[in-house]
Length: 175
Image 1: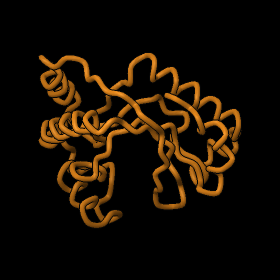
Image 2: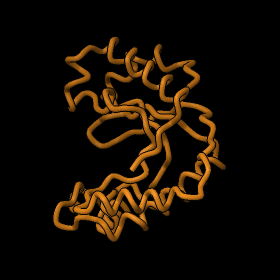
Image 3: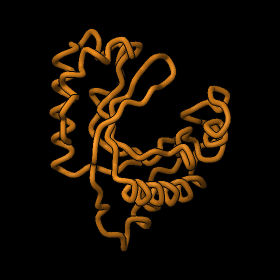
């Protein structure tokens, strides 16, 4: 379940992704040990999990969206976040008050999706995580849920040894 970033931010992120892909080349971009997610469409992921009842999931999301206006937010910067395996994610940062809006929406999605979770077809293995991340996988199927949720739109991940080679593309970028 994701939030589309709107035409302007979508276009800005998509163009920046293309610049990075052009800079690094297919050999790096398509090697998951060196880079990930650069070819994905721009979005704010609220939860990633498996369901056996897609029509019910869609209806739950429509019900959640009913009566809500557009989610208004402002991107204030870009940051790097380190991930296991030596990958660094380049991602947007939202204003604090906007992060809270996304966190509330995330929690609403988690609670609506939870009963529809395909317990026998988990996307993530709880044994691959520790602490809150493992508990989140057991609870709702998504390690970065609840207290670990940090709303952002990701450009992609690259090896920490590769990250300096794209700094000139990221530095000064105003999404």
